Length: 223
Image (cartoon, rainbow, N blue to C red):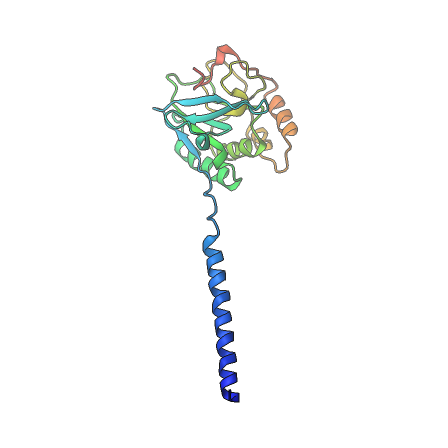
């Protein structure tokens, strides 16, 4: 073979090798499984029922889902119940969804809407002791722009079996007198870097009282 022919054949072999490499790379890319979709925030509207199942895990004994869709991927370890009759509830809802998304917690929470039959005597923020700091602070930051003052309580026991220690209630059906926290005390709950024990200490002292779950102040969704 002449010298020009050998050079041409060499170039052809290089081009064929490059084509094989590119083809293999494209095939490898095509075979890469797509990333799993980010779980979305679940909602239970006022006309839907919250389903509470046993998880089998003593650390988080309950899982929450919406009636009619209790498949395993649709269960959530935390629930936030929002009184939609509160002044500014729609804007609060919007901020809460944003705050949860920023903390990458939206896919772990079920947002339950409720409308109590009576106006509560005070506006209560009730926090379960198993709810993580990120979820509690998302709720608090969503509340801060509202004009209401809040009665802040912690539920440390779950004797009712309705997952109270894994839930947050915003504007619960409280018909008894209760102490109201100042806005500055509420802001303490949103301080960066709080550990769960520090958050619990603030929740226990912010109103000067500790509230255990009581039949006299039944929250919504527990029936």
